[in-house]
Image (cartoon, rainbow, N blue to C red):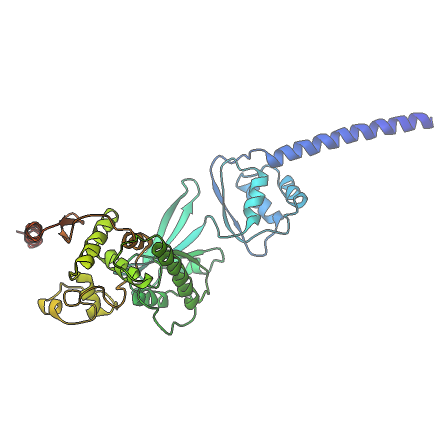
Length: 388
């Protein structure tokens, strides 16, 4: 009898082991295999949450079929204590293993709501937008001008949410004063700014920030980035440039930045100024005159007067020879490289051509013809505006 009991027990144990092994293999396949999602979703993980809550949310959204396998896999992989707060994009067909990696990896949220502060030459704007997981595109929910109008209710709502992301994007050609003035109007940041950074010292780029970050730290990050860009451009410069220092390259790049908004023209515009420097000609560029008037504090908002073109300021390149003493804005990476590696052209003149770009010329006669054509375009536009 005991032999029969032992034999049955052994059989039962073997069957149980086979069943357990099969269950483990099945569970592993469920954990590592493609998931049931047909469209991307955004899963939100609140601060203080746990894998039980996350697994329920994922089951409700159809991202996983068996929450207990999801939790077991996280435990087995040693990641159950690594859950990160935020909003995370889960791609179609993502396995449980991939989802565990997404919600434990850390870093910036990959979906959800984002506030983008855009520092432009003419205005500061704030845009509240939300990623649509199905299309992987942002949908705008509101836009307003901080400091100029009351913030919409949706902005107040997302400011109170812990997983909202914030980004500051400032345009190439913005002055340091404009950057500081804009940062002071962003309620997501803290702290005072005692001094405006030197002109040209800030890199026009996009910066991730967090609520409560100090304005001084953001400026320091911008300055560090610009220092790297200037250093790289200076190292890559052409050997025969008429520039004696990285500071002069930065100044030239700022003039290029203010003279053209057409990316393809930067090298040609740079060549005009380099050719003029090599020939001992005055640069004669309007943006430097404007900077001498405004010192970068806002936009002039009108055309230059003849008296201003003749006025002696350190930045008036119609009066002084060579480069002005400082940059006139914060140039971007492309303008820095254009200043370091200008196109090889015979041009020493350029004027607007009516398309947003410029007409370039080698001789004064050719330039005068281009100027005459531009005056005609200006007159035609004035007549159209007057209803003629």
